[in-house]
Image (cartoon, chains in turn purple, cyan):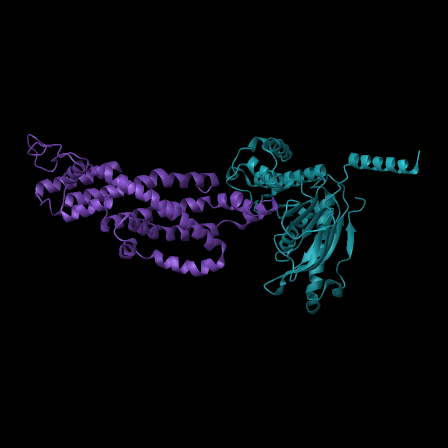
Length: 272
Length: 302
């Protein structure tokens, strides 16, 4: 897998150096690497033709000083994600439980949520701006709206797959009232909950990036770095930030949500 | 010595001898005119089921699919509310699920997030029993079903037969008045089933629980039961009650059992044929057909 990537990136770089394409039209991997370093707070010139000072920039200035967006932007986005995703989980789980438990709630909310789920999350941005303005609340609004319906729907669907025999068994063993929820239905819903949180995270991340891209706020998150790249016509930075977004999302998914899901499934014997 | 004190002594002796003989003192069940229709169609439910189970009796309910065997069991368990009729357990009417009527489900219904031992401890935990006391009881229960070595295994790590043994232990550990078993061995292979028949018989002899065991297998019923209740479908009604007067423990492969299975099966087949030949009469109550709830005994003196 890794080798394949090395081959593809090398071929891309080689093609670029042989044909000498304009770097502002489409960047080579080396340009993206320069942009990474730039975001990390020091200047490089991997993309320049090989020369004596390579990969240092021609003027030799390596540390221009200032911010390190490679650290600050994901940190700012991370805090927003934690807060927003927590709200989203609370709302999504509450709504999902309500739709599962009460047929009336499901009848009213189910179709609405399914409909809203088809709405791309950036489409919440204009409403957020008019309703709340260009501020943190607006960003959280987009994040929560973009993910809580998905959590609610997938949790409801997951809860519906709980075999009725668990509830019967719980009742005959004396788990009534809140005990049935705490000791039977909650643990029985763990596989559904794990899957819906995993799905919810990817929705939340996408919504957050979209909101940060458009909403002008004081703290510059990862999405805003993309907007900076666009406004300076810096295609290197655009590609670099996109790559960072993908990598962070994949890392969190693999290291947190996939692990939780696998552990729960192993416990329940749902995987070989 | 006063008359009163003689009377008192007499009572004590009776109680002592009862304890020595381990006569069960609870688990008397009286079902009276139980009726349940589903979706307004009486053909889909059970109708006018009346049945008495003595303390410590092993009763098997047999019948074809759709005859309402499971509905009857679910009504007794309190999982389904009957339209008419009453269920009394030791004189007290019951209509909600509760630990006095433990159920062993066909598909075991064990909680997959808990280990075997934790599953068995669940009912005790719900009853608020302290942890230390729980573990002793669980250990005894595990020993009873010969699963001490598998205590910490997760449900999916157990074989089908082991799962049902855990389910039986989980049901018995809460000391119910009756044990309700809903085709518990239907999905097991023949060998495992025979093994579990032997274990269940052993457990029943030890615990003296009243057991209501639902099955579609006449062979299984004859092996285990003191009494077999035969249901017929559309709607589910009692058509026959057969006493099996064989002593326990039984030799499952003995000729007497085999012969009895044939006899009971034939009785049931004749019954079906008679019912079918009187299609017009079929929907009337059993007594109208003239073959209804009269019981007969088999196996005397074998």
